[in-house]
Structure formats: C-alpha cells, structure tokens
Length: 165
Image (spheres, rainbow, N blue to C red):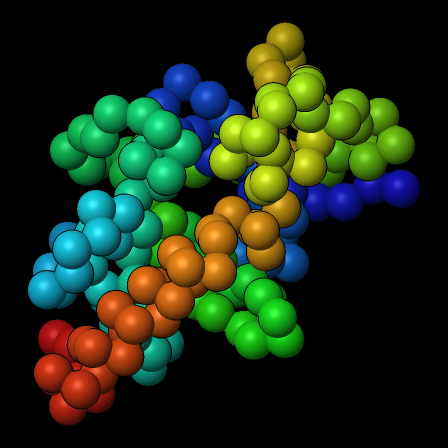
C-alpha cells in the first residue's frame, strides 16, 4: 500500500509526514512572541482565520536552534489526540517535496529504548540513498506539550481579542 508524504528537513535529517496531516506550508513569517516559558514555542501566527502555535522542531528533535533563513518554512499540521483536533506550525529548515512511499517496504525504526523519538517515529524509509524518518504526527507531542501548545493559542486569543496582526 502506497501513501503520499510531505518531506522536509530539520537539521541534517529528512522527515516525512502523511499529506493528510498537513494543512498547509507557509513561507517563514516571524511569529508573535508570547509570555510562554516553554522553549519549544516560538510564538503564534494567524492563518485561515485561526491562531496557530509555532513549534521549534529543531529543539523538539534534540538539535541546536538556528536563525530562520530564506528556506525556512512553517508546516501547519492538523493532529488528533484523544479525540481533539489541534493545529500547530512546525519550523522546518526546508520543505522538499511530496513523495509516494510504499508502506510495505518501510522498515520499523531501529530500537531507541525509551527515547522520546521512539514515540513519534513510526518507520524509516530510504530515497536516493538518504534515510527518511517517517513521523506519526499525532504522537509528536506528549499530553503536557499539547496542553502547552493549546494554552499558547488560548493566551493569544484572550490577550489580543481574537486578532493577531
């Protein structure tokens, strides 16, 4: 069975996520900062009439942060967790392309013990000699992290009267 995936890079690693989990890909716009102590949250943006928390994927994936450049994109994900839909934007160093992967050829991820990555990497593929880590977007964040993301959006709504410019 084949499925389409959006591929993007964060650091030196290439990731893929089901196109059904991606709402849109936006050029980088500096997010509005929030009084949010969580270092994963870069701030929020407004898109399609909704406030969207922007997450620093480099930090989430255990890499050193970097300043956005001309290739930086915001990938807006729509995930489900415990029956609730949540939107968030992830900062990607670049977005590559939409590819089709044969899920029957996908390999399980290597054993990672109790690492956080074992929770959200569902498989490993290869394309043009490069590994592609296949993400399960619904499990990227722990319940506590999801609560922080939702709180950031709620805070923005109450502080800015539902409007972010």
